[in-house]
Length: 477
Ligand code: AMP
Image (cartoon, rainbow, N blue to C red; front, side, top):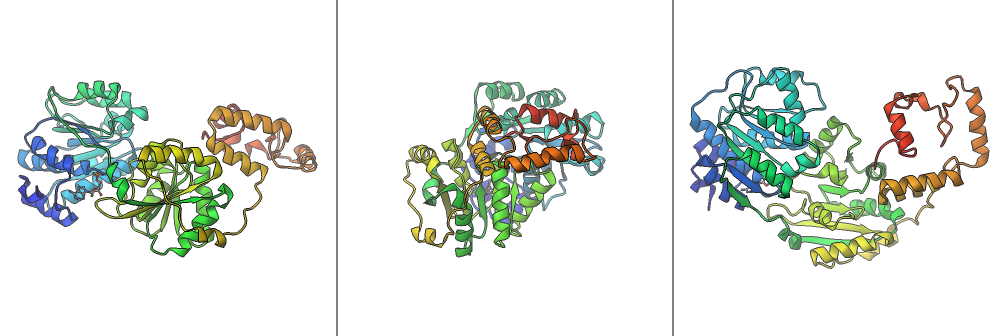
């Protein structure tokens, strides 16, 4: 089937041609005709299958057909998504597909000021893409109402539930008018998602299931480097410097700290890069992602959670700097390359203590990953000696929180000032009495610095309490 065979209006056909789509993907082929008839849809599909166009194109067509107009502070179609990144991505798609029409779009999400978002809603919008929290917030402020809604899309439902949005979703659904067309998408359908779908969809929805993108894995060229974890940074740097064809590189790190460390190594080597993970502000994450998409930076370093659902075209190489504990995660990671019929290369680093993870991955994918060019090892500097502190940090990356706490406690018993000699400890203990900024008890046990130097460390602060509970770690792993 070709797009031209679908009953889509000229402006939409033009937009599809402009974005370069020729044939509908399976989910598009199976969803678009039923959605154009006004049926509800239950879509079991992941990002990467073309599901956004599968719902956006028929919604746009029906908005064009209905002949209604948007009223102030209302929207006609609402798409709910769990994260800001996904919301922006989906709104971008709507904008592209609606570029030759007068249909308006807006995107609202938390973590930023709501002033401009409210301004965009004053005259009403046709398509509103939103995250649940900010939507409810703006509904509460009477900046937008759902009373004129015609189309409701709940996307990434399983992630919504994972992220604890169930109550917000229920609140939003309670505000929807009874007559509407509903589209519900989820990558998986456990019981709680099936129940949620039943509360939203009309009886007998069209069910479209698209197998997760596991087939392309054969198309991805893979390489494995067995390497000591202390030399991974040098190996990554060496490979990037030796291969200029690695133009759009996604590097996966197991921990947030690890991601920052990798960017420091690469920046030092003059490689343009940025990291995205949960400790970065929304703005920084968005900026990093934008720069990566526009190829202003060559390497994006991400943790699995930060990278979930992020859709970047033409990733040339995926690096598994650390192997994931869950083998399925490996498949998701490397599926970021070799998209839409293109080739892609996935390079995995395996430290001796990751051999078990490697075996699980090879078993799941039924592929034995071939080893890369061994000559590269010769170019690497000898490994640096690991400090007690970095050893602890690395270990934390592989442990659950309980183990990490136990280990931190044990380590503190052995050497009270992690990595410091007793002499330095004594000096710091003395400083405690001379530093005018200190109050009684205001000494950070690890390094003797005043605890309240930062606001989060002031006595009685929640962060400080959490730190005490976490055995000295300011963030969870
Ligand atoms: P999605 O699953 O909606 O996140 O889409 C994944 C990627 O596939 C996006 O980059 C889309 O632009 C692209 N895409 C969607 N539909 C098609 C199509 N029919 N032909 C080629 N690429 C497509």
